[in-house]
Length: 269
Image 1: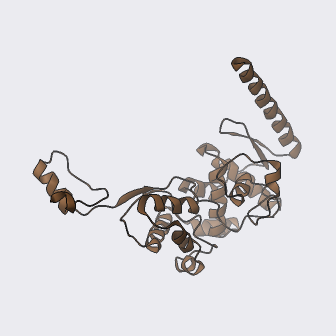
Image 2: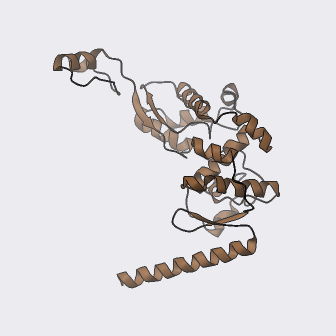
Image 3: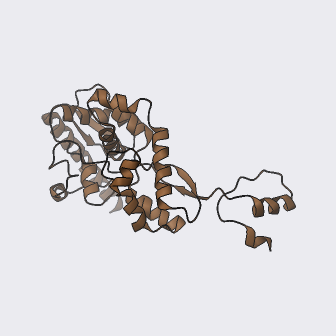
């Protein structure tokens, strides 16, 4: 019957079709593929898990592709893996598609979304493109407020220029195998090249797959003297230029949080 000829996946169908035309299109139109959506800032491990869930692509096989250094070089990339270059987007992928072909398509999409003259602009800033994508991935996890991205970027650029450790919490989260999460002081001691509290400069590579505006922010930091920031708890940050001001801001925000917690306890008690 006709029902055995219908392919799994998404199709483009015109509105106002008769039942006959609809059945004819469903049985003769080639499916666009199964939609697979990768959110901004997703890690390669999470990409692998989604592909396994949506397409039955073995996650271990996909990760071996991501970490295949020869394949990475073949795609014109300098990093230790494809982390950072699997561009977040919605893809329509047919079941049974080879994992290398999937990865190649995501990397091609990365280059399609790369800001104009990104390589030249990276060099002018004193970085390689890989280092800029690494910085963009930190910015991606550091703030979800688009208007702050270039200010966050300025802090890291300023710290790098001064030879200061980045002390970026997202890099520790990545080293621990977590997404963006609140950390404990004991977490900052994790022994990993991605721990920017223990290692100078940028980590070896990106910690997620950032969107275009985070890459743009890494390329165009705001002109500031900021060296520190602390989360306010509402999705934004307080920025400061000296350690003493940073500690004062942190104490003030900690006090506000404690008072808010006491107020909540009073209302529910």
